Image (cartoon, rainbow, N blue to C red; front, side):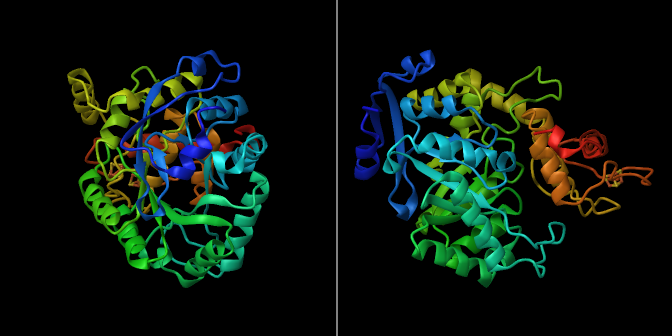
Length: 397
Ligand code: SF4
Ligand code: SF4
């Protein structure tokens, strides 16, 4: 690699915009097209890390050559998790990254804590520091690394869990031992409360938050991340594509460049991790940094897309309390998006399993009383995605 990625990471000295010269690429013709493209960087809060504003969400990618091409193209930060692809995601990254100097990339991973009742958010007997640390060590092993750059507590549901002493102790210990340079949390529900708790903790360095133009609580999240950024936390945006498609048949895609620009127009978002699975997406997402201004056509598209229910549920969480059976409707809608927007059936299954849902959660309920402000017919979507639970999970990976 000759664009001096290591120097880039070490110096963190590029201004608002710099230029990355790609090397000869690793046989990917698309990577070769990316030479001399502008890269906009932002500082990740008090961590001091300066990252390109477009990073790589690896969640659904198992293609090692895509990662190699991304590195050559100028992607620096790669985001995985303990749970992605049943652990194969981290393993794949470990195999690729051992070919590269450790200080030439930034890697993050996440661990979800055991023993938390996902429906109530209550801590149970299994929610121990030891169990959490054991999963983290497993992640390090799969990645074949001594440390990760960012380690996230994955999806703590509420303030009590964010601030639970056993997890704060674990995070402090991980940092003290040098096994993570920075620690953070990820959230895509109950975001304002969770982010405020992260601010109050004085432990978390970074917040990874679901944030996009279709989010029903985008205004509240915007305010909260502004506060977090002001307090020195690094802010990373996820789910910027809002489900990627407007319809289950995937005939009407969301303009991904426009959606990504929308998130990045918020200066408090320091980088984003759109999920990338193809060389085309790799190139298209990177090209957003050529110009962050939304064209009139893009603005119109986003306005129209906002009016369509689409595959992304707006996350207002106004449904569970309406549901006669108190189903975690918002989370089931997330599973629906993974299944039909991303064709990631394993991830969809994992969400359903996490909430211990059957293949027909609405059985015995003769009338759906949930009124979604976005007009989503939740009972139909629940029936559709829950059928996955009839299949053995290993058929879906
Ligand atoms: S399904 Fe509708 S009501 Fe429920 S969280 Fe999503 S947007 Fe809100
Ligand atoms: S049909 Fe399903 S989502 Fe609607 S109220 Fe009944 S149990 Fe809840």
